[in-house]
Image (cartoon, rainbow, N blue to C red; front, side, top):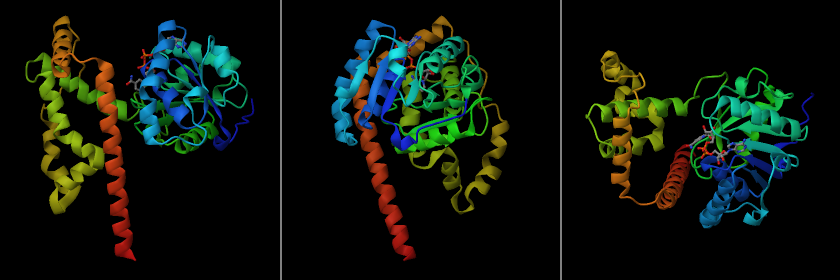
Length: 328
Ligand SMILES: NC(=O)c1ccc[n+]([C@@H]2O[C@H](COP(=O)([O-])OP(=O)(O)OC[C@H]3O[C@@H](n4cnc5c(N)ncnc54)[C@H](O)[C@@H]3O)[C@@H](O)[C@H]2O)c1
């Protein structure tokens, strides 16, 4: 099929397939961006959850700022996948992370979506080539991997599979940029992409430390919240090392700390999730949250995230103004 994509500026209707944590989050984001949003999830409880999530979080979306015409009344939760996608300019899939399920759902979306529709998966690491394998028109499919919550965290990782057209990847970049996202494109298929892979490495180490009794759940969280996590949101991990090298920058850090990479500080083999380790992690999280419900913790996280994003944007603006003042 020759690709006849609408321009990203012309997109008015988005379908979200799968209404869990990420699907519900995408629904909120696309409503805030001023689109008509169709949502489909086969499980009745999920449909109620989507509506609940929109109702609970809409005031935060209003506070963030709505695009022209944005309204939560533009959400339609429908009874079939066909109904969800048949009017869509773009489909954002968010069903569970199971390769067979994703490829079946993609084949179905591909069957019912109009020819101009781009189909994007939220997968955290399944190969796009696998997901598009049963599609008749795989050229219009790509990964658009968000970070939780998709209505606040700007990053989206984009990549194609073997049969994705390059125009689709570029289309996804333009579309996400227009929709308040900060996309990065991976030139080839890398398992678990970039950010998930980095997260996974740290999660594995954390679980090893908990299993070995070297750290508690709380110690792990404090060590990142009050330590490198604070800096990572400003510089990222690589520039952070550059700044840690004094006047010698990253070169000094590589010479100084490079050799420690060979020390057995990390144990990058996945730990066995034994019953004991599961229990330790679950009890630790319950202790740390003080038994408060997840929805309450999510609302607090969201308010704090908005404050952090605003503070960072404002500082970046001030610093950029100061730099242009210096040059002028
Ligand atoms: N949770 C995260 O932090 C996160 C972050 C980024 C990406 N992702 C990715 O997003 C996707 C969804 O993850 P999640 O955390 O929202 O999972 P989830 O379990 O919260 O939600 C999945 C939803 O899909 C629905 N579903 C199951 N079969 C379906 C079908 N055939 N058609 C439509 N809906 C169906 C389920 O009812 C459920 O509501 C996964 O690919 C995951 O890897 C998750």
